[in-house]
Image (cartoon, rainbow, N blue to C red):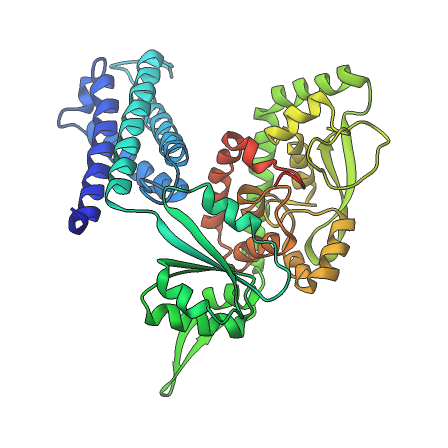
Length: 444
């Protein structure tokens, strides 16, 4: 069975997507038979559905059996499916706006659309459960050896992350990188996870792991990010990794700025009811100011004033949030949980202080503290601060300064307009992972 593992998982994936595809077209064919017979409408709608689903699966992650928890896979599949359904539905509605059907654009078959989404959710649910149950039936948890640097490193977050995926990983030991028993421990393990291990020592460990066929994980530093984004180059008969210093080009700046203005302005209009209700709730709660303003750093260290909905009591100490922080108002807790407090930053984007996607705009006090501990932290100021980005999507309030830097550098060194679009779509995930993304300092 182990030999055919990938083939079986791939077959489950194909059947799952085929079932979701059939659900959409068979139900909508009740009132639109032309979408399942040989016709231009069928060709266009089916092509659209398939292309959008493939693109969104690449953005949100598809059938990641064995790699993620059931709920995370289900969430990714559900979001991809819903957006695909909506785009294909509106395309079908537009195509029906003609003399033979509807003389004007008309929203119809809403009940069928909802039925499709509900049925697809259960299809995804069944196949996620089935896939992960099969995977963990034939695969035991990997015996993980956590190797930490010789300094006083806190590996509790690493262990907690592994324990959160206990069906895949089993931590059997934690050891210092200079421990004489290290090589023997590696031989006994399936997977070696290095955290804050110096580069020179890490190289020896990787060599030993490679020699003994062990899986390897390690947290990156700046050199690793640059190497990952380098090109392979052969000069005469000498092999190199070539990384060329670069900044965002003026053409990219123009496109990025136009995109920022158009999307942020549209979002301000679209989300105006949410903004209005939030403002009223804040005002009604304690009668204080609606907006909170604070100085933050953006590209090249330029300081600007960021706008956020006020989530704390007025005239309190200005510092990072901690667990059970009594400065946060009841309304503020809801706004922070779903990141609604950050929506006024759309005005900063229109003004040009920020971009839709970019490094997280940190408090000036935090920037100074982080740079004392980690001088490389200033590298993230090479691009304009963003409303969303790797650090905002995958990070938390209590993410370490180094991890924030690595997340931001991953974006800066791998920038593209396509990447911006992907991150904008992935931002939707933050709403559904509110509890995880808003962990404060001291939560773990």
